[in-house]
Length: 253
Length: 191
Image 1 (tube, rainbow over the protein chains, first blue to last red):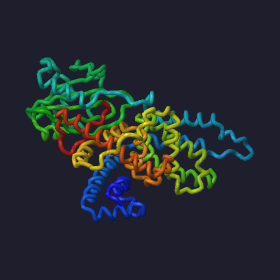
Image 2 (cartoon, chains in turn yellow, brown):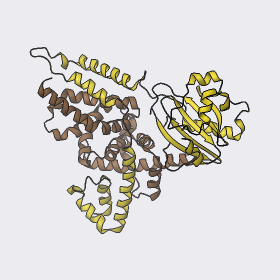
Image 3 (spheres, chains in turn purple, red):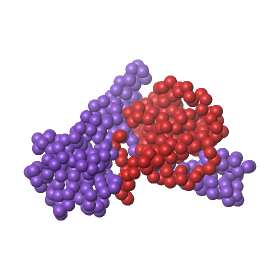
Image 4 (cartoon, rainbow over the protein chains, first blue to last red):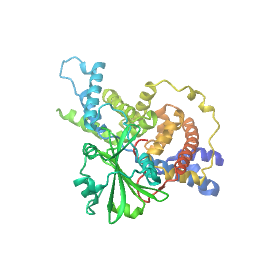
């Protein structure tokens, strides 16, 4: 077996070692043990494959899919009563079951048209924050001390922006007259606040119904002097930014 | 509920629990849209409920499910004309530069699925099944109804395409000149 033939076989060798006992790989594996160049190639190949497989394994089905499968197929697999016509074998019944299953799924995920929903992204918010830092921020933007209870909540160091639920709704933000941006038809509210003498901006983009994933854990970004943390719950995509430091920002969450 | 019905129901639940997640990942790489992927998985289990009892070797249920899902996918769309000539493309590069591993490492699951979705369809199916690691190359050949040698060839070419796509995606990320904080997740909201 040439090295090329061995490579051809070994690139089908699963990175988790599931094929270790498969005799079809034995000769190629033995050759990789003997040949340093082939061994090095195989190590890199497995590492690459392992990284890709690991990433793929993090992809989760949407909530409700399992329940939908079980509910739908339970309907279609119910045995008929004795002597009854095999109505449940008819194609129309499967159509009915599929429709019912879809209804179950839609109710589980709580959305209308079952399609990916576009919304304001963390990237878009970050670009807004960059523009604000560069001078786009207006001087008459609402400061937290003009927002009553919610403003006080923002400036209270005991409150965690991401770990706690922000006590605010989009309707309330509109009623406060907060600075509102239009990002491709989606509104974004921006509020300035201070904690421990440092200035921060928080951006809140209301999420459309059915947006997935329902929650996003906080993650950070930095460009030039700007630091930002983004996260989401079912109500908003949030971003808080400042020019202090990443540690200061993370301490708010 | 009759005892045998209850038993069948438990068996079916176990089957769903064991396979619906990898089936969804496979479907997502093929169909590219979450809703279509869900439909494919759903349809696959419907067909199992209808015909699965005919399977004599229960140990082959997993391969049967992947096969059925793939056939449903093919049935649901017209064949891409490009897939006729893709087999004539030159072989993929044999070497795996260490940068390719770094490119893949710096991306996340969503981006890797997006990269897989860009791989030509004829390579995408065996490549995704390979990375799911649920099926051996022999089982992949059975599921896709192609010879083993074809599976290996498609894996080789598919990996070559995937590396280029991952490198391009990683370069695009770098162009944004945005530095991530350590130990935090990447963007996940739809662009």
